[in-house]
Length: 257
Image 1: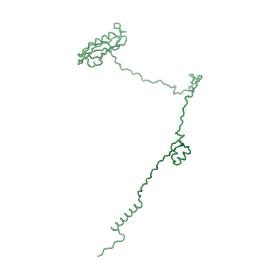
Image 2 (image 1 turned 90 degrees about the vertical axis):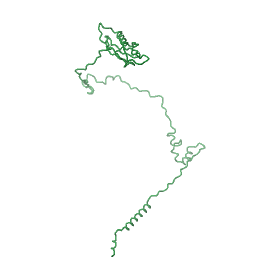
Image 3 (image 1 turned 45 degrees about the vertical axis):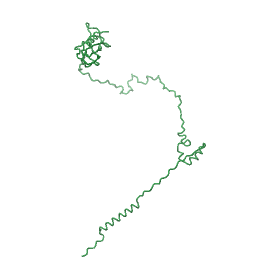
């Protein structure tokens, strides 16, 4: 039994691979034919520089014919024989004269003083209405009750210097002194030994203004006691008495001048 003949135009396996090979060969040929090829770059040798020696002075014409004709690039370069000579190679500095123009003061016409203002008696005013409309500033009304201010009614005492923080017995009460003048503070400088006792006390200037108040401050300072410390030398400090001044009476002491 014989097989049926192959139908004309049917793609077989061998025919398919033959077409693929033909297309690949054609593509490689086209790439080789039209593809760019690297061409070697030609390296040009640099033009050697040349120098011309001039043995004698040349005129501008001879210099142009000798050098500028050979090398045209010399002309635009800065040179005393080109266009740059007058441009910037030979600049002329101009000095300003020392004399200046005299001051021209504006004249004042004293006859016009006071005339340019509008008269006060005119009914119509040329001033802007916004300038004349000046209303008084409005203030908030005072509160009905004000907070009472605390007024100091007794004298104060304070230790300053290296003795601050060592005080053991502060004065219980300090008197207030009647005086016509406001009394200043009485500052007493004291020295305390290692046992905490005051060994020296002296009044410093300026004084309070009342001799009795200063003497009282020195006496209170001598009776102060401090915490003992191990110190070979006495420690100095200040006892400040801030006195309260009262209104003077006939029986009270008078302020020292």
